Image 1 (tube, rainbow, N blue to C red):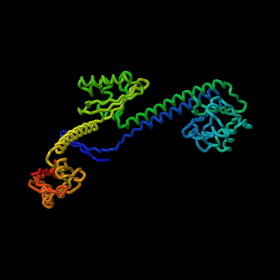
Image 2 (image 1 turned 60 degrees about the vertical axis):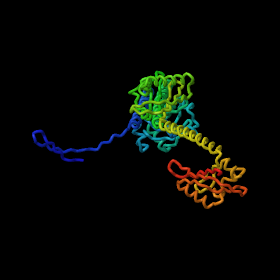
Image 3 (image 1 turned 30 degrees about the vertical axis):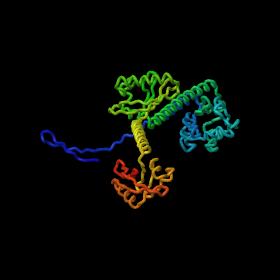
Image 4 (image 1 turned 90 degrees about the horizontal axis):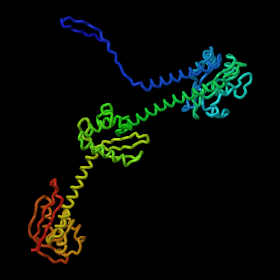
Length: 462
């Protein structure tokens, strides 16, 4: 954006400026830069290696293939010699550096090579007649045969000496030296020793890079974990904590680099701190490396909040402690509520049992009815008064069945279902057909929210 702006000075005068605002973005290119640095370092190493080979064999042409095992291919890293790269570019129609050759061919027919067989320096006669493999074969048939012949003729190449850059059964690349007719490789042992040392250096560099990538993957994996993770060394210092660990407690490693400092922050009360440390020491004494030690602690975080933390600590083989922390505050609160609810239910259950026992043992005939008047319970006095041997013969029947005037009983049930009570005299009808006069009391069974759940009917013989 380009615009004009006006600036007014203290004395009232004005100055005019043209301002140009350019949007700027910042992109994290750390990995890309690291890859470029590693690539440049390998390229410099390859050039240094080939230059050293040419010092050992003055006037020769040399090259280096880098082995990319995951993609099963060779990459030409460097070619050196007087006019060699320029001449190859002309013959191939492209720069040979960066050219890809199929690595899998070296392990297949007709080569049948292994890293062990490529460990030593090998010599191949190319002209006038190949001793075994032709230059076309040694290029894995990736370069046309006529161009291979043109390369040998143009640079007067008669033989090639090849040695793999091998270390511990791993092939990192292949170095080659082209020799003219009548030329021998006089310092063979020196060349072999140098390439072997270069193989070790490349192996170490690759191992270091693989370790760096492995550590980066580990950190990415741990940082995406839903649990807080911390690594603690033998001196009880934090080696690493992930993002979730900082989110849970609120403290970064630079604010509390040691476990002692950290515990003082999350356990501000001296008594609780000593209790937690004592539990940690006790668990450690009873455990062995690799055994998980779970504990739940109540901690205070940086923002002043209190949290319940489930900690799982395991001691690794080198003495490092790997600790995961899970915020279970909500789960703990829900658990306590559940325990309280269970205790309340048990208390109510005991109260109900007492009430049931009281109803069952009373001498007054008592029946419990559903809102529509069906008997759901009858005590022993009720069964005896109406002359029924078992409760099954009573339960499930409408209450009006047990009275001489059923319509009046239905009216009583409607009154009670509407929330009222009823008290009066009715004529009962026994199981054997005989009748009796009874004083009947009907009261509603009401829930906490005022809803009528049913009716309790109590009868006494007059």
